[in-house]
Image (cartoon, rainbow, N blue to C red; front, side, top):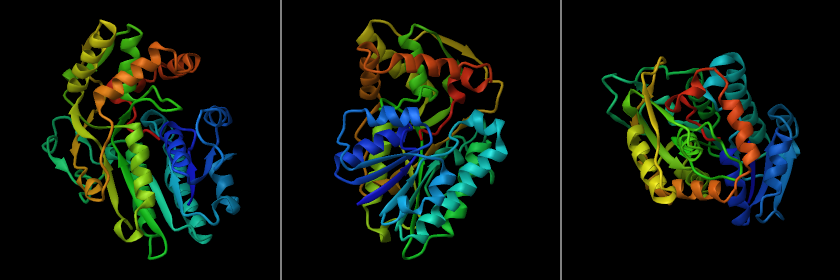
Length: 351
């Protein structure tokens, strides 16, 4: 089947492109970053059924030939950083909501039968100390405070609500709300909390943990995120239309993640994490969710934290990750904007 992926050269998009190609699907890989798209095209995987197109969302919406005769669009492109969204709320609304709707309308007009939106579990999260902090929210729960915390989460909820109205018997709309992703992907993101923690520890840099790591994070490996998209693409429409699914392997406190990371580091490298403790100056999100709906639909996680951390460390130790790229991203994420300085304030999205 033909699957169009926006943000194909991103963290999740690159893993999904490789997975779909290995499964024999015809992939139209779209991304506006030519350099990352070139890196993905050079990655060792079956490329016979993959088309690479460098264009913006606006251009894709006009190029209906790329969308026509397709089975599904997996829409991963967008502003997926909390800090970027806070700095440009109007642009975030335009990209994450308006263009998502315009793309879905264009896909629907040329006969595409499925549209999958990359959403986020951050729409559920509440401030630390809230009475609902330790509740477990399920897929059909509405965000408990009415308005999610932060521009990014608000934009994703607005996109979900707008896209749901487009679904009908011929056009299936699915929302996949992802938790905090981590692990190795052909195109890495080092601003994500667990990846950043691992990189800092590998480089012998201290890790700043706020409020004793009390916040909850639903976590999942990036390869499991890709496999969830594939699973939903292949499911019959009647099982998924208009539904939202939470993607996670489990809920964990950041303190637990630190302990597991420290244990893997000591086992593999003979050293652990050097922690620094502090109090967050910003409102911290926390919360646990249920992933039972996705499991009832037949999906199961296959990658778990310890093995994912070990794989990432092996890639770093053997230089099987582009270290100049790591250093370039490190320079970017260490700008003094505040959010990137705090491991538990980094973005929840892995798109």
